[in-house]
Length: 245
Image (cartoon, rainbow, N blue to C red; front, side, top):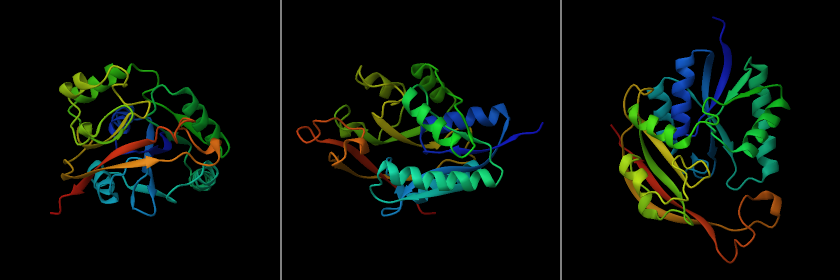
């Protein structure tokens, strides 16, 4: 079978892992790399805050190389779009035809991805699209995946949720207004074991810190609420420390 050449958009978390699991089972795509945005100042995965060393350990265990997209500390949407457009155009020229995502139900985000890819002649593919998130997270657990919460949105989840493994007890403890897959950005994860991994990624829990996200001067550069100055938006980040062998 003539497989389509694709890049996989890899966050390192549970939705990425489950989406990759299904893509590998489908066997329709030749995945060349796992593409991840990395904060160039801190050498950590953008938004999730996971150390770059752990990201590359994931790639080694899965058997796919990591392609880092280096971003400045606080890129504007224009900066982000320009960097991504350049990178995607290079991928298109190398023979890539598709870009694969683990998104589930956010229509605006899907439209954004599809339209940006069209600008450089690439197609988007969403293996988990419109599946029930409760069903998905239970499938993830039942398949034997293991993932740890590395970041929580402070307005919705306290720091006591960071560092926890997602299991049936974790799901019972989630507030009713939090999606079980965290699809609205309520929490982010790092997957360290499961059927796509040759061996588990070993780590220890480090410090948990709170980082506030202040409202930017230009409203279009943010996804946060207009009253952010009165009620600061922020995230609790739990540091994962790689175990040196």
